[in-house]
Length: 315
Picture 1 (cartoon, helix red, strand yellow):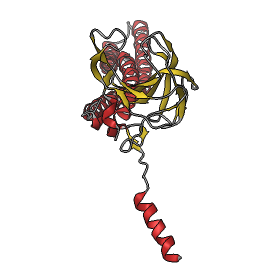
Picture 2: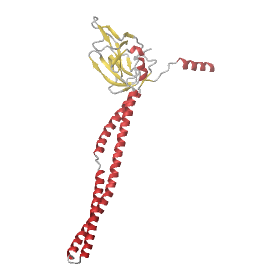
Picture 3: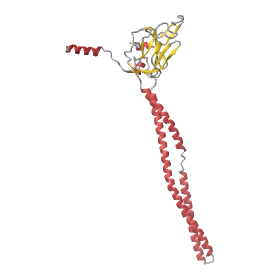
Picture 4: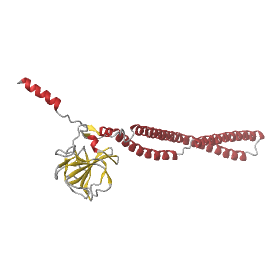
């Protein structure tokens, strides 16, 4: 009995169908589409913008540091200029006082007047030197006068780059990520009952007029009215509605430019924006629309806006 149980387990493991969770890249490879967006290009753009943003940020920080340093230097420099003004005022007052003293002593001896004159010239020379030194100090601070318009300009540039950087990060993340579609290797028709292709993808005789050739941008699958229709892959309902030619229809968006369309339905049970899983029932087949000649399911597969042959992905 034990051997029989082990044999059953082994057979179950080797004979059962394994469900694979595959992403969109597997489907794109079937149609020879390696990349819809170049990851290398998006990565390079991200690196370039990041570097530019970093350089602008460094420039702003440098300018701010210079501005702060100048502010500190200006504060101390103002004190120095005030000191000069005080000393200059003192010397100017001394000269005025000395002038008055000389005038009062104008009748004194020549020696006394010469002594006053010598003192006056000495103070006058000292005053002149102080005034010159003050002008030199003022010239130095004027040379360091900083125009902060550069900071404002660079900050505006930084804000624009920040927005650009965030957008590029999203573009890069989208380029490297592929949505999980479900089992692609063992893909089954999106119907709950056995089916087969009744009309292939490509040029065919117009089934309505039966006179001219017409391009069929999908495949037709046999299905009795009210056969349950399932989602071919994981995705989101983009549209569910009615058109004259296609009748009741559902469009699923699977990401990476991949969409599937289910037409000539009897009715649908999903709504726009709804998330659906692979093989989840979304509608029932029917015979609606002016382009239908009998009960069936029209299945369309689009990659990046272009119709491709759905038959390629089925076993």
